[in-house]
Length: 120
Image 1: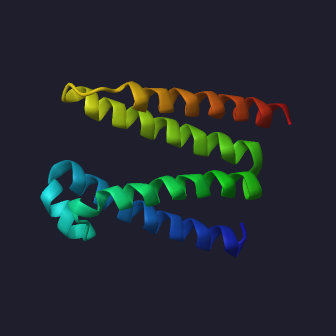
Image 2: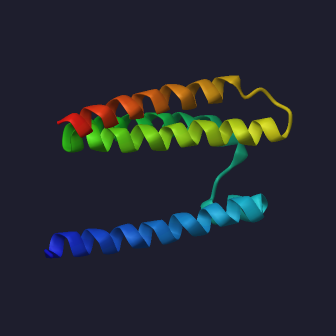
């Protein structure tokens, strides 16, 4: 095992722990999560724009540095995000169509990339 893998793995574990804490906070107490993350609801449209820009950056990074297998993982993750958002909105009786469509499109892309990766 090389040091690069060990250090990168350690950094990934730290990031996962931090993200897990933030996720649990958002689920348990959104008001506290706003304070924890220093988010302001008035800026959410700009924050969401940034989220979409960086989703695109993750796709580009997977394409450039990882190929079809990495793209399959990114698209599967984005599919989960679409379906999760649809589930959240569906629970309160709001439209889920666009989120579910995004989830299905990402799932289709993930499966196509997975097939390419498996055949390579």
